[in-house]
Every structure is written in C-alpha cells, then in structure tokens.
Image (cartoon, rainbow, N blue to C red; front, side):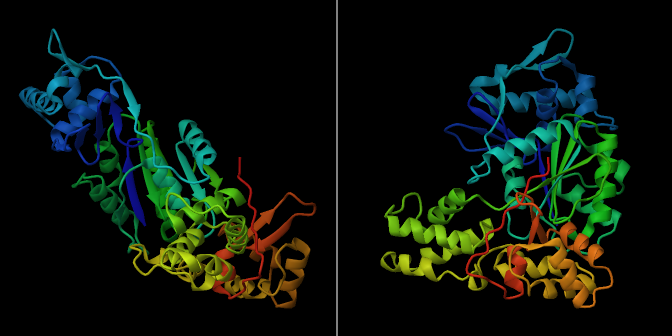
Length: 426
C-alpha cells in the first residue's frame, strides 16, 4: 500500500510554489529552499487562513496543535519565511497587535498531464469537493494510481509490505509518511493533522480494506476539511464513500498514449502506422499499463522495424523489469497480485468463464458456472464484479460481460480482439 499526502499539490503564488509536505519553497529561477518543519507549518497555517489575520497564539495553535510553544518561536519562523521569500518578503504582513497575514494570490500548481483523463480528473475533483472519501476502482493496469497521482501531484511514500496490517500499523505508517512521528493512535494522528483543507491519497488498499475503511472514517470525522482519495480494485465500503470506476482508455486516447511512449514527442503519422497502432490498442484493451509496457518495448526496436513490431504485440509477453513497482513490471504480475485476494471458488469461476467468448450474457455466465459445479453462480459473479474482474457493457440489452483484460492475460486467454468498455459510476 502506498500513502501519498498532498495539500492538492504544491501551492503556487506569484513566482513561488510551496510544497507543504516536503517543506520546500520553490522560486522561479532559483533552487528550492528547505524551510524546515516549523517554518513550513507556520506558512501552511497562514495560507490556510485565506487572508484572515492570525495572532501569534492562533498561529501556534494551528501549526502546533495541543503543544505549548512560546510566541517568540513564531517570530523566529516568520523571519525565516521572509528570508526565504527574499524580495517578496512582504507577502507575509504584520498587523498591529501581533498578528500576521498571508497576502499572496493562491493557485494550485497544475497536475501532470494524463492522456485521455482530463474529463475524469474533473469528475473525481468534483466528487472530492463534496465527499469526504472517494475510491477509484477498476481492474489491474487501468490507471487508478496514475489518476490519483495526477490529482495529488506529489511523490509517494511506499509501504507495500503491509499486507496483513492492523490499525496500529497503518496509523504508524501513515504518521511516518506525513512526517508526524509520535502518533500512536487514530485520535493522536487526527490531532496532529492540520485544520486546513488536505488531500490524503491511500493507494493500493486491496489488502487492508477493513483497516483502511475504519481509518478513513475516523480521520474524516475528526477533520471535516480532510479529503481521502483511495485506490483499490474494490470499494472500501466506508461511510460517506463515493466510488468512481476507472474505465480503459478510449480508442483515440489509447493510440496517442501508445505512440507517445513508442516514438517520443513526435511520431510518423503514416496511415499504416496509425492503423497498426489502432489494431494493437484494440488487442491491448485500452489498458494504460499494457500500452505503457508496449510503448517501452517498441522504443527498444530499431525505427525501421517498429511497424512490424506493432503488428506482433502480445500483451502476455510485455514487461518492464526496471519498474520500481513489482506489480507493474508485467501484466501477469499485475493480474496475479489481485487474483490472489480471491476465495478459491472465485478463482475456479475465473477459469470456467475463460472458456466463454468475450461479450457473454449473465445467463451464459451463470449456465457455465452451474456446469462447472459452482455452488452459487450469482454470488460468485457478484464477487468477481466487486473485485473489478468482471466488467459490464450496459450499452447493449441485455448487458454483456467480459473478464478484465489483465485476467484474460493471466489465464492465457488473449483473443485477437478483446476490446473492453466500462462505465463510470455517477
């Protein structure tokens, strides 16, 4: 599981950008300045006040809640911030009576571009504006983590080994990731979180759904301005949770991503190349991880041979051994990582459903599972759907279903055309 803390990304004002969790002030044309934890907390408190004058006592309470900090320490940190701002030191104003105010015009730094995901980013951002917990769900490789990272626009701290974590372990890991050592309980962690609006990204929650659900509920109850964005193949089933299902990329966006990864910023637009790329994207199901792996493999092929290589792309053999995330090194690893979470009956059902053609009906699936000896076909299908392994295309009546493309890879079921369409849950 990865924790990604962010205050909606670095906060931009004028020629400066403040990264609250790295404690850095970045100024155009200059190297980043490490503010230190105390100065960073004071600046975050001033920015969070949105133009309101804060006394030294109010700043102390917001920057160090529950701690006895002398007012002179606030003056020291204000002086340090003004030195860091240099020619723009007046952005932090002093008000008669011992108050301070932040005068900058704020704007969040733009998140990195995500091919074909602009509208989806807007949907998720809108949900976060009104919902304390938003979970991005979808099958392996569909881009849940990338989308969350695009919204958070912040580095992640990996704690992937917490597969059997209890609540205390999760609290300790999150406290470390946030730079809040000493938080040994949920109430203690909540007390140390800032009162200002804050986005926490809890990435890859599949192995700790219950613990993460309890943690998310507890933190958002204690900090109403807090927003939690989780990624998982299943919903957390937390109170106040909204679920957004992430679909594969549309055809044109998939082609753009594949060609950008294969050829860099520019690529030959010959009709034969575009046609081969479109066919390859259809075979790869529009799955961003598959497209990224395919593009990386094509870059290793001499330019004159890439057209032929496009026609031979086989998702089952795509890999990137250099990837720092084990489950993203190849498609089989991505699929197997989630398949291991299934009960034995659901794993057997996957093998049975792999015998059906892509685009089967619910009745066909139930009949196949009955033939395979499944005790409760409907319950099994519900389990597979909850794990984002069975996808529905409701554009047709009756709805048609297919296995997630990555699971088809795991089961060595790779038809010549396996195009997946999934629906956003609104």
